Length: 65
View 1: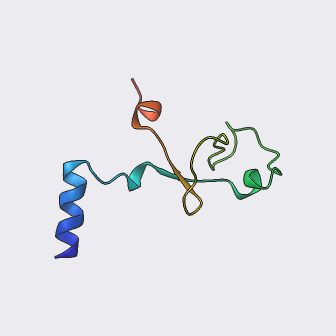
View 2: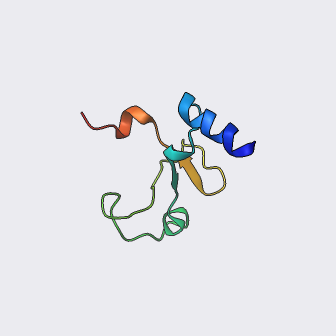
View 3: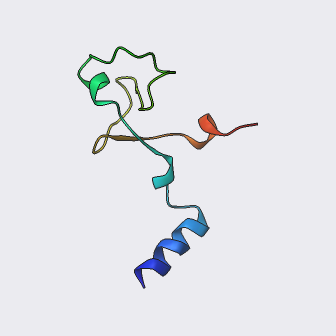
């Protein structure tokens, strides 16, 4: 039953978990020496809400034309 609910959410496009990115722990401590473009983790600005070490990306900001 739970698997069916998850599949329904995915098909309806309401599950945004696939848009979540892990925030760089070193960046959160102001110690990441890598530029944003070279670090595999997110470097969100201060005004972006971080929940459980993750941020949700805007779909429009990551889609390829």
